Image (cartoon, rainbow, N blue to C red; front, side, top):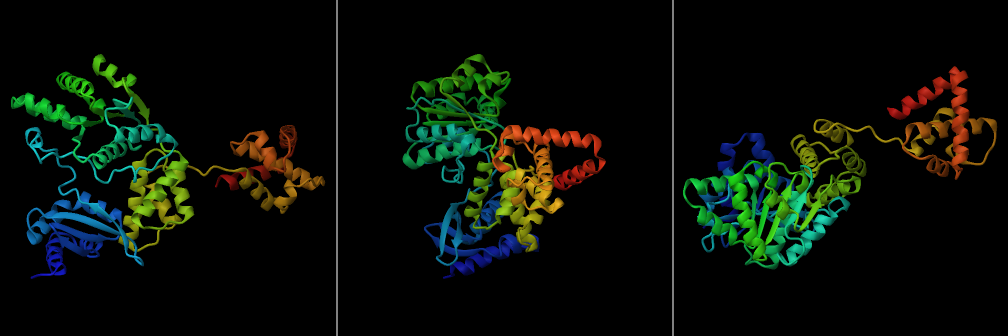
Length: 455
């Protein structure tokens, strides 16, 4: 009888024959087979990033190899090694089919034992990083997961720009419902997929089956509802499904890229129903949330980045959680493929190809440091009560540049420059402005300092 190592070696041979040598070496050669029991094959990978990359790019080939060697019906599970010393790790189930596959036909899905929720198992509340921009939607989602259909949040209408985490959150709600109630019929479907299913049901005279299926669910999660715009037949059918589920105390969760009031070409009777429950916006992640998302994904993938690199990414990748994930994935890919440490230079290189790098904000501390270095006077002296003519002049220049180059108020500038008053800062600025009109040497010094601080 073959060992699991021997069977996996056969899979590796199939993979190597169908991939470039670099792709095989990077993604499959390091995999360690851990266990094959009760039809489940467990493979150890270096990070969750590796598992997700394989799922997105090589799953059909990997599945074919596993089925050929381990047999039809074999399920795949990844194990991510977090601590090599203790052997601690975390398990991730494979999607088991190409990630872009469509839901099974409605009639088949409705059969006992064949129900497929279409939820993404990786999208959970544990992996959803909480922050001020998503606080309301997340709190409502947690309440719904405990009592779907029996809260004031029905429907829950989650809206926000692309990549802010709407799909992750609604999948997390669905997954949590199933954890708390494994028998619950939860379905996640995109508006586009629903439209195609409706068209197929109409073409094949299966509208009753279509309605029966969707009216049989306990939680209906509809993603990107804005794509119903202008589709009268689809909207009419969804209206009847919505009414039936609402009246049956079943939960509806909808997402959109805009609030109900801004949706175009959607029937008013639907828009009215969208507003019955809670409309919760997920805003673009702020700096704190962006940094926490990066730290969370670093812990998940078992990687370490310097504070300098984390801060640089969080400062510059501003609009989307998806962009943050893309940046981290790109950094990991560059590091893996080139065997290069992820430092600030690599981060700047990768980030600059994906987003426009924002100039670093100039702080009061930056200005005081630059002025101190330029004039050879210590920062302590500039902030002190020393009234010597030379130090007072440098202090005036620092105050002037703080107001010109930072976003700080005069009160804040005065406080950080030795707890001086708003009036004192105004006086310093007036003196420097007056001197600049008549002193070309001072104008040159100020220009040099501005250039150095902006570079």
